Image: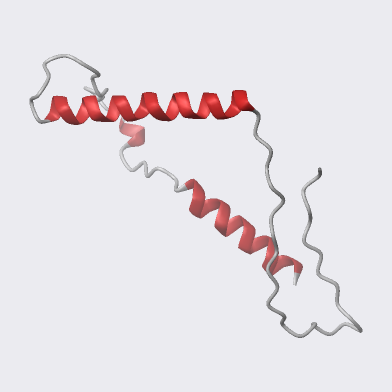
Length: 100
């Protein structure tokens, strides 16, 4: 089923009284293959993290190696990774503010 859209209607140009309504998101349907892929990637990543932690504490001489640039790119000196969840939240709030 298509995703539901939020619609804000004004009556006579006035804002409606604030009502607390629980808006339920439509349930997402995942196929068995999708769930299997997610589980595989999650479990594989958990293994990598455990092996990295073990190699840092000296438990294992072999295993995954974390890549670190030997000569970092000077253009990336002030690079700050983006918090994607925060960015999406800001975009969502900006759309709400622009619509009101």
